[in-house]
Length: 255
Image (tube, rainbow, N blue to C red):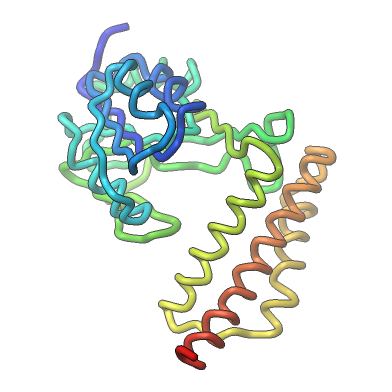
């Protein structure tokens, strides 16, 4: 396939099961940048095997890490993928065919289709789950958020074809991920000066379940949809419980 002046940028930590699929899914990328946080598996070896330029960098948080990775890109146009994502063949064709007409001041969002519990998930808020992945770094940059990082752009334009996302390796991986993200969410609330509320602890998880399972039709995905909705509710519960713990511990001070 003809190469385009686009840099594929990926941040990694122990992604040996994903990194080759991710890189090889973007055959038009003229430059591949992988910023690795000192993986202990074969991530770096496999990325270099796929032609990536690999940089080792201590973890800074999602936004700052992706910003650093983008700085290493040789081209102004950047395609930023997570290691557990890949472009679909249809998306490869779409981006290749329209590259000459891209607006450098725009960020391009792509629908993301996620695979979990043996199937592609189509409901519960998981699809289309638009993600901004293609942008021109001369006009747009990542913000500094440790969680829910995003690219600041002047205008967003939608592409039609999806990114593919292998979101969790297993239910255990989902539990571990929910635990990590709920901690980041609680720290974000704490930094914003949000106060713990018993009402939010009790009712926010229930509302999240109702939102994802009923209003966003998670029930259409069968048992996996139910499991996902329960997991989403539990993650919200953990976030507010951890906020309570943080405020209690830090108010009390060192013993």
